[in-house]
Length: 186
Image (cartoon, rainbow, N blue to C red; front, side):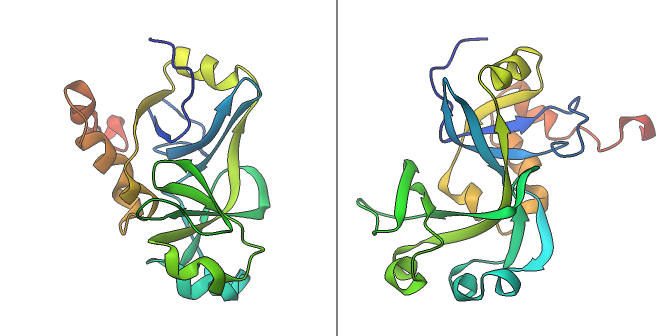
């Protein structure tokens, strides 16, 4: 595997062999990756909890489905806002992560930046790795690393995101999108 200096802004797509229930068939957007470790959010784990139930002020600014997503097993009582801002400079209260994707300051009044957001998702918790931990998992073959697209953050069908992301890859990865949920039933 070729060493990558930073995975920030890329997707980690769980291999079919990854059995950890937090990450089975997960698609993780890497928000930060450096020598101190890595942080990301799982894009395809919607919860039944509506955004209005916990962050009512932000509910009108989130896309469908208007629910909170389980961002990962770390700090599940905290909330992260990830938004796509089309165009050049983003509004105050939004910090660019990669391309048009960035983090929203959920303490800021939604009216100050909500209109500038192309899409917004709220995540409870996040996925985190200590220094070298993610690199070890990559070396063990737990994740495929692929390029993200702004639409991944706000996929209207998060349950299909794992297959959709793999399907748009070339070669062998596209074929893995057809891997059955339970290969023992084949």
